[in-house]
Image (cartoon, rainbow, N blue to C red; front, side, top):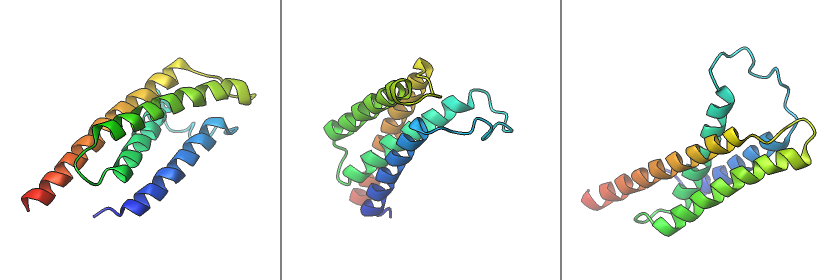
Length: 129
């Protein structure tokens, strides 16, 4: 069973990691030997998928609360947009990218659906067994 306190702490760490990696100067050769088409978009998708999944799981241990989940989803999308804006305003070597916003938002939406399904299955198992 997943420990809610650990998930909450991991969600905080994950959010800090996203913020740092979105705004820090990153060595452009990092990961350059790995050949994956659109790998930066895949990374954006995974970042925001996990963002929504972790925060949703940490706040929902009872039957899925749609309002909280939707709020987390909207916060994640807004946060992804904000990080792109900040890249243009606060950094000298990063530029905002609308395709990153699409990857961030897509990851957040899929993360929301996966978290919803996970919580529904978790609660169904608890009730039926």
